[in-house]
Amino acid sequence: MDGSIASRLRDTTGSISKKKTSVYQRNWLLYLMVAPAVILTLIFAYTPMYGVVIAFQNYEPWKGITGSSWIGLDNFRSLWAFKDVKQVIWNTFLISGMKIVAELVAPFIFALLLNEVRHMAFKRWVQTLVYLPHFLSWVILGGILVDLLSPSGGLVNRILGQFGVSPIFFLGDGNWFRFTVVVSNVWKEFGFATIIYLAALAGINPSLYEAAEVDGASRLQQTFYVTVPSLLPLMMVLGTLSLGNILNAGFDQIFNLYSSLVYSKGDIIDTYVYRMGLVNGQFSFGVAFGLFKSVISTVFIVISYRLAYRYGNYRIF
Image 1: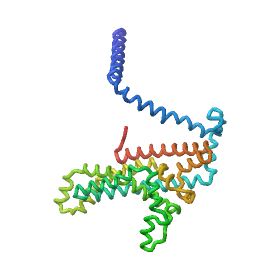
Image 2: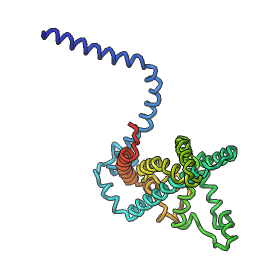
Image 3: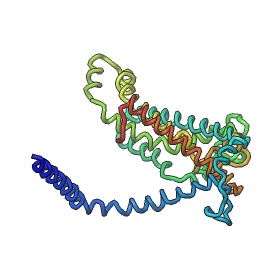
Image 4: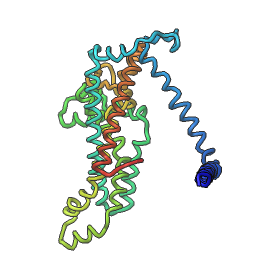
């Protein structure tokens, strides 16, 4: 009896082993195709992570990582000793929060308006026109904005001057700088973000509009009672997931637009880490602040994912 059970177990184990082997053998070509991507990811995304150890050192470039002394969590404790850190964190939350709200509302409204356009050629022309800024880098757009918003001869100030408005230093005044950052980011990204809402609009059941029309609903009422409720769950999911990036306020944009005049209102964590770490040579402090930001961002991502799963039934895995 015991011998029979042992024999069955050997047969079962052997069968599972053969199945596993056959799976690897059957898919070896797929593994071979994905191997370069895995290797590149390991080399360029994971290997550099070794550098975060200098956050726990008094890093001296001429001694290297192996020769620099270890100081534990001193860099993290000294974060709060810098008077600018709290202001930088507040700037990051404020600018990023304003961007999230604007990026949710602007594409939503634009998609609703574009959905009402019945002339297809005009509709495609408008879509193409608003998509274009997304494909331009902030280096190019930064140069364009500096010229457009210049207080001495910029096109925007010239137009405002026609209405008796004094020249505004959009990129040199802290409050105006935040406003400019949010508006210019919406200008660059809202066209591309509209694609998601247009795809959702295409998926709304036409019978809902037909039923509303039979009930005597006007086009505006159909929008408020059919279209908007259909898009709100998507908007909630996008907003919830955006919370995971609330500490990413846009290094490229801020770096290309700001100056020392607006450090107090426009400096965010990423630009502050760049200035302190690379420009001022405080490598350990810069890495410690960047690592602190990454840990907090991870917590926000996990929370936002759980919220999106709970309230929007959204899940990746």
